[in-house]
Length: 309
Image 1 (cartoon, rainbow, N blue to C red):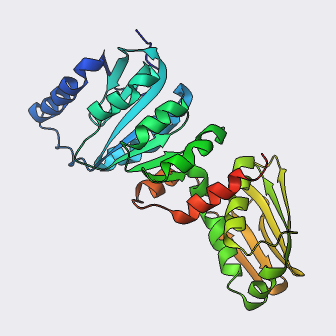
Image 2 (cartoon, one colour):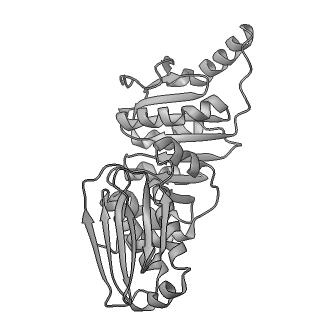
Image 3 (cartoon, rainbow, N blue to C red):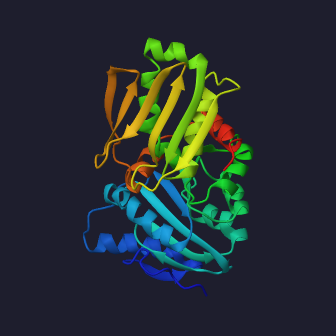
């Protein structure tokens, strides 16, 4: 039998997989006997799949929803076991070492079938990812190495509302640049775009941002694209610069500050933009509030895959 992950749902009870629902029922009835306040009605299921340490971080990020009620969390690590051990709390279930071929069956059994289900994919087999797409109202990619999942994305767009947590972390960067293109002199220069440079702590985020630019701007055939790695901590990007027909457009992190400068040519076009809360909990909370397909993301991801890693 699989060993339960140390540090995952430490207050839970370890049970056999077949005993999960009965254990959940006992926990609820036990709370009633001890006159504990009733839990709020469950509104959705969040299924998290990933390696052990990334499941622990996800469980901690989802605790805010447990405090508010409304979400059942299912946390699954893959392995070789057909009868894995489980750990249960009143709002969450962790399953350790489940064989990938049983992943969709386990999720179908544990999710709240009459309510929305979001899959938060933090790593695992691509086959498991494809199987879960049909069970998810929303599929949120969040892997350290996204290439394999990104290659499958085109086949998943019509099956679920797909996104990537990198896209969420880039929201302020996209919004700030879009606002600069509202300026007449920047908009006029867009058709004469000569080059783009992106300095990125996370190169996959740099490619996704570049994909958004290429799918949003009238990208001339001769325009150059350069994505450079940087070692700065924190934000996924540190600097984005565009040469729009002689107009220099720049987004740049301020050293030691949780904000970046957005400039477009003249000094009077400078804006200071806060990066916002980019913690894991804040990012997943933002995504769980979305229900519909994001066509801008889909186009950006397709374009990003055409950019050399």
